[in-house]
Length: 243
Image (cartoon, helix red, strand yellow):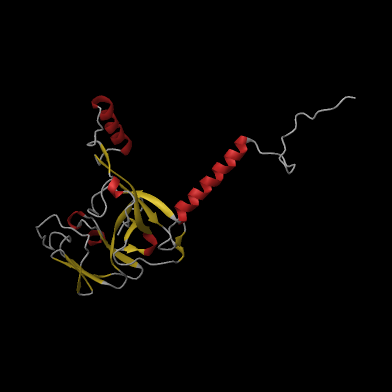
C-alpha cells in the first residue's frame, strides 16, 4: 500500500491555521512598534536636547530631556492645537515651545508670567503684579545694569500677559533671549513640560556628539586614556528631575 505525503503546503500551527513566516512576524512586530513610537512621540513624550546656555545652571549644554506632551493638553500633531485640554502651565514650569518668531525652532525656558499677570523687570529684579518674584534657580553673570533705552534685558515693562499666553525667561538671565525681547508665547505653541534628564555629556558644544565620542575614543586608542576633554559623560545628571 502506498502512502501519499503532502508537499508544497504551508506549515500549520496547533489550531490548524497557517503559521506565519519569520519575516512576516518580524515585519508585523516592527510595524506595530513603529506605530506605537509615533503615537507616543506625538501625544505622550518627546526627547529634546539643550544646544545653548540660556537655562544654566538648571540645564546645561549637552543635556538630553524627556518632555511630557500630555501635561498641557492632547494636541493635533500637525498644527499643535489643543484637542483635549488637560492641565495648564504653572508659574515655575520649565516648558518647551515653538519659537513665535520662527516656527521651525523649539525653545525651552521657565514660565514666569501667567495670563493676566502684570510683569515688570526693574534693575534685573522681576515683579509679578507688583510683588517681587524670586526664582531660586536664576543666576546673573553680569554686574552691569543696562539702561532701558539700550536694552530690555535688565529693565522691562510693565506688560500684561494676554489671555491664553505666557511670559518666559531663561534661568541664565543675562544670557537668555526670551520674552523680554520677543514677547509672549501662545498656548497653542507649547510642546510640553520638561520632566527628566535621561542623558548628559560635555564636550565642544559646536561639535556633533558622534564626533566628540570619536575624539574621546581616539585618546583611549593612542594614549591609553579616554580624552574627557573631547567627550565626558555627566553621570551625576542622568536621571535628574527638572524643576
